[in-house]
Image (cartoon, rainbow, N blue to C red; front, top):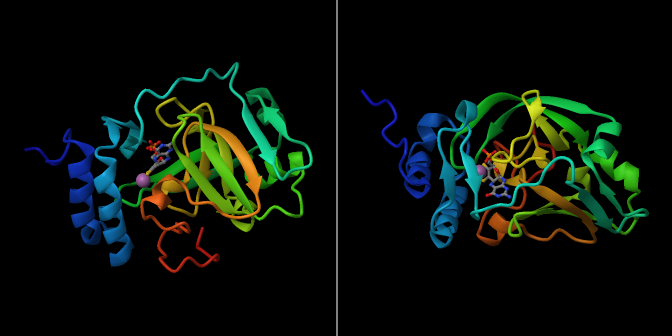
Length: 233
Ligand SMILES: Nc1nc2c(c(=O)[nH]1)N[C@H]1C(S)=C(S)[C@@H](COP(=O)(O)O)O[C@H]1N2
Ligand SMILES: [Mo]
């Protein structure tokens, strides 16, 4: 008996089936958000999805052929409204205080991976290393896939459960999971956790990211649809 009839089918169908199953899966997503996801998926026309993925993850990329960055030459630039713009090597990141988070990872389309261990640099520690200008109000993240972006308010970015992750479950973040460095935003849905993180820019206002341009909520708190800043962690 095949217990997972959607295994191996294109992501578009699985996502839709996943949404139909949201109630059964106990995923707290408001009806309006589901409608937005529905609308958002149509113009994308197929997210790349490679199966099987480790421990319940789906590998997502909105674009194909993302260039691999080796840990030896990879840099995360931090600029914009900061005192000292800097390009961090993996060694630089390793020299900053290290933070570890054990958390569930949840995609808004209905899948969840319990208890994933993320290790890296908490964003507030990285921001302290460059010095944030008093004019900065938001943080914009850019993927070196050349397409995907995300943003957080400065308050959200200063949470200690938001990090530049260099390790997942005790090993370097793999290319498929967004390595060498990916953003990990523990209290929000997976789409905030930008893969292949290459650039961080402090800005004076929140700019919508890739999915948000397609209708997702900018405030992506798991279990809430009211956008309040006091989400459970
Ligand atoms: N650059 C980039 N980051 C991304 C995405 C993407 O398509 N491109 N998808 C997002 C979504 S919707 C989810 S659920 C997670 C999936 O992470 P995974 O591919 O490691 O499972 O990555 C997020 N970050
Ligand atoms: Mo997602």
